[in-house]
Length: 242
Length: 232
Image (cartoon, rainbow over all chains, first blue to last red; front, side):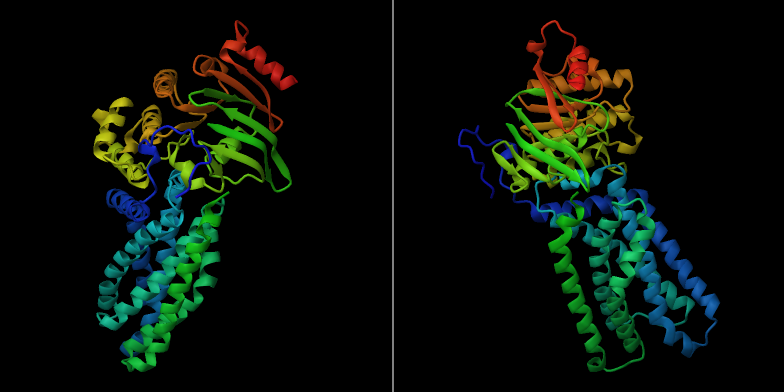
């Protein structure tokens, strides 16, 4: 704990307790985002409508036979998740910026990486909710069974990587006037390795390939997740500070 | 309580603060005056650890900035012209959230106490987005004092408030100051700060160009002092 350089300080008050609330702060931010969203449903409804529109448009535009549908499924799914996710990431950070709440978070006496992890958890929760609704909708529209534990595992891993880097970049983009345009421009080039690995792994699972053949892609996803989270943890403080 | 030496802040080629020196004793209420663009908000953001100084030394409550920023933040309460509150949460939920961020012990009782103090107990379960600007600003003060900070920084807290809301805010500011907290408040409104502050500093051309206590002003007009400070 930091120690003051003077000795004549008055007795410890509430304000002088040592900082021990890192985990508490992470959970508080995630709770706050979920509670606010539960009330407004502003972010989730936008993400969901957008995601449903994307799969509908692909469904009508491609008019594929059953075999071809299976072949494009992983690509369409990840395009849908990536686009809807961008919408959610932008909105999630804009809520903090618009009423000055980001300053409120930055003023808290916790390591600022707690803000990153709190926002990441809530963004991830929103992403999972959208995915949980899109998967059955997609299954019905494309007459493809997507309820495969392997596929769900890949979706979880891919979403973690996507949200890890997306949360960091959205906190950068939100500081600019062109935040809505800037986020996809920043995010998509960085996230390409995750999307490619996720599409390949998903495709392999849907084609019924052996686990050994899919493992390199899954391992790549895990490595990207770890790298993206570690880098974001290290640089978040610099990204949000003036 | 606050000690700033030779503070410089640059944004690219533009230098906003040019070797600013500033001291505040414990329990003082300092009004920081200055024209638009003088750097008052920039200075307050640096004190609040929201912005890094380009050069200079800052100590608040015995801790250095930016090196001991987390310890400084624990001792600071900040109110700006934005409420820093979430519209889709109730007044109580907002305070509960910030209380968790500051790890405030006995949070439930403290929230009751703060809501009572800012006169919003009856509206504790209402969404903040349904509040008037004045009520939001009162809750913002509640948020700022929730963790019982030693130092309060107010950045133009009267902005956008009508006369009644300003008067109510002033009463609250007096109450807060009367509890022995150190307060630094920026303002354009000389008439309003004249009755609130115990000292008046003028920030002009990137430095504190004049400083005078209320007693030092004597019968003199604050406006004359302010104009002279800007002219000098």
